[in-house]
Amino acid sequence: MRLSIPYNAPRRRIDASISPPLEPSPVERRRESPAVPDKDRQRPAARSRPDRTVRQQRNREARTSGIPHGQLVERRITRHDLPQKTAGLSLHDEEIKALRAIGTFRLVTTRDLADTVYGGRRSQLQRDLKFLEEKGVVEINSVSRRKGRGGKVDRIEVVTLTEPGGELVRQVSGLPEDQKLYSGIVKPREVEHDAQIYRAWLKEASRIEQKGGTNLRVQLDFELKSKVQKAIHAERKADPKRDVTEIREQVAKQLELPFVDRKIRIPDARIDYDLPRSNERNIGQGSRTGHEDIEVLTAKYQPSYLRAKAQAGFRVYASSSARATLTAKIEDDHHLIEDILEL
Image (cartoon, one colour):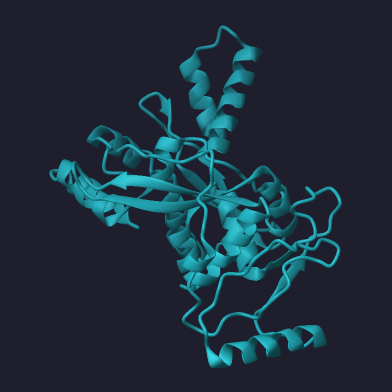
């Protein structure tokens, strides 16, 4: 499957193409502090509604009077060490949650952000992304994908952080200090695959929380591969004559990664979490920790690759269309088919 991604110029949006929300719009808010005015910013044009002007006026009056507004949460960024373009911004709760997901998983589709963070309010998401894109916090790219040979070409939108955006998210996200954040697209041909990791994480995180898991952290394959390479390099430097396979097996054990067919198997993502003390004998020993390794499969994967992932003990996920294609490839291996969870 070939992907076509415009890198040089993020997708431009036309204000008039952004339709107003179908539900009452959130409180009209000033996006920048008085110290950093933005006279050039234009709001999307709204349809003419008799009650809209009155509602917006009441919202502005309520804001200046200091009246709290339900779920409205703002966090003003004024740190001097942030880039000038991103300093002085006021971010809403939905924007912070979206930026947290984008930075953690490197890229997320606009569809997934609308469904999971904005509760289906796509118009509000479009306005917020337009603002963040103008301020140099995020980049939006369109990815082309073809369904089968000669099939229809679909386009999906993915959002990534810029480097200044990564600095901003580090300050406002509330994520653990050891949670790595990412910016930019690294593997263009794997964008569609990587965009599904966020959805797989949502399903697996829900399962972990149901069994009492808390304080979830995510390690993508980039981070895990880096740890593996550093550990192998250190062992080889300490004893250059040592067998490489033996070193790899030791490193796999140290990092709690599966060692299958003389290879260290690395998942798309690892979810680390804490579990509360389960009984009185554990009192005073603090929380127990655990992890789950997840892998996203695509229709192009071959049966041998699928079996290796299954042997590694990963929680494997695939979209409904990819799952149907994979099932046809491994129709004689019913156990393996049952192991593929649907996104």
